[in-house]
Length: 521
Image 1 (cartoon, one colour):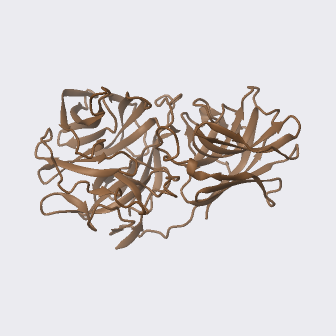
Image 2: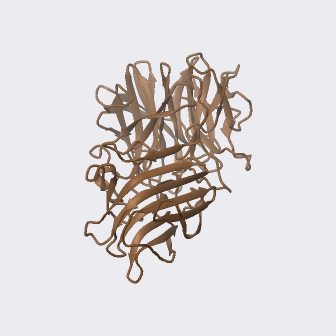
Image 3: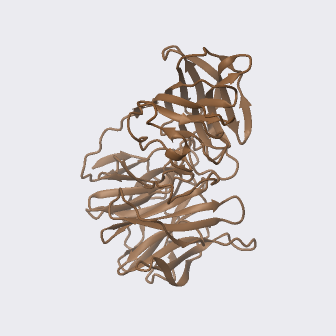
């Protein structure tokens, strides 16, 4: 029996949807405003997960330009039936008012790595859609939003039959569940076992009161009875526990008949989820009265779970990734904002062996951010890059950034000052408030090496002209500001680190990046 440490998908990997096909497990996660949309991972032992697909990778089929932070792709649902994968997802267009504009879509593929079909529009009554395959019928399940101020905004769970031949919903809409007394009912998933339909929901909000609740019925349209032991999973009552915000769970059965639940969680640093919401797995058992619960008892998520592995889990290495930019496309770890790398000014062909980033808008823009970043997946890491960049004036910037969203980031950049010439400067943006460090003059020619050193809640930037001797750039910065708990408004992502270039004058400058290194400590 292998002992596996949680979380299994570290860093910004929220809202997991798990499915097994043969000996292969797949997990799909939310990506919000990041492109490409919906990352999918594969494993045979539930510990060693590899990236296998980004299902929404075509700008013509996924338009996120101008999407607000914390909008975009929410809570995918991945299922499999009769030789085909089905992926549902929401595009959230509005999330900063009583109203939510949430459009739900379906794509399908015969293989997990595609090609995926054109999106089929389903409805826009709520978000977190899932698809339940019930014999020869298919049902769309989604939570619903009621914008009326005198009503419960999270108003329950609806189902409606899906006609695959017509690629459309049909028949009546059934309100099958109004939620438990915990409230904020979302993330519904349906399964059937031993004559019962089980509805698993996320409740309590995705903050520190998050949880998993369960209801069941002998008829798919209800009525549903609530598990008397609800919530079956939550960290709410254990403030100092290392795994917090546990919720949004989905069950999967192993080939040997054992059961697991994938769910989201976070590992806060001083109460702040810098790494974002991650994915963990729990052992599940079924009780004599037909409910399911954590195998170890209670409702608190376990930091370790067990599995009879078909493949032996590997030792868990610290990541050390050095990207030399020698391929035809960016590696999957790098994501861009709202549109593809090709469309936002990233070029791997003009200077072979280098990533050329053509200057785009500021990091505070929702359009054409010339920026590629990867997830922060450890509390302690160094990120280093080598860049050649000759700014014409202060409108031109290129460098290395630790980023949460357009209102919250820390940025060490090469730019130009009227008196000092080419220089290094650190810009820190916290909930739109901008602070600049004093500029530090550097030679007019030559590559510059930039480093971000993160140690839990502390960030220190450095620069070097030779790659050996590094000098501090600016003061220590607070990484807690790059977390859901510190941003104003909604925050659902996690800290990223990446490279970028801005041209705020519009005369065609670019930065050339020779390599990027991410080293966990």
